[in-house]
Length: 148
Image (cartoon, rainbow, N blue to C red):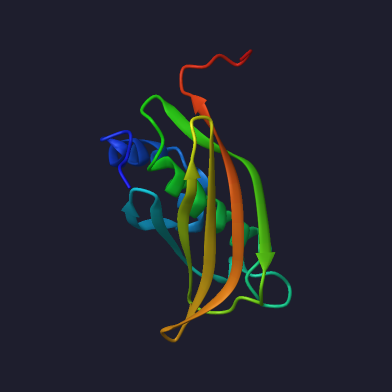
């Protein structure tokens, strides 16, 4: 799959500088290629809800990041994808040392991209599939006005 923006890696690096939540959660993109990314974050106690499992909001966030940045790899120069819809299925509780999300683009259209992400918990070297998300992303022009 060819990236329409040959400088997609630089565009992603530029966008990541503005991702304050990703920095706070210690989320990183550990693999990037056209149409596909892997995002990871170390699990800390503040990622847990009251039962000691990973909070659903953290799982949804890493799924959104993986699907969104997979879409970003196939976004033309001068545009950025934003999530228009995110649907997530929580398959089982998450416990472990890390979260890993595999994001991939299913279809990259001119105005909308469709992507999905599978989220896994890593515990003692084993991956457990804990969630699957599907996402619709709208491509917005970077120089668009707020009145748009």
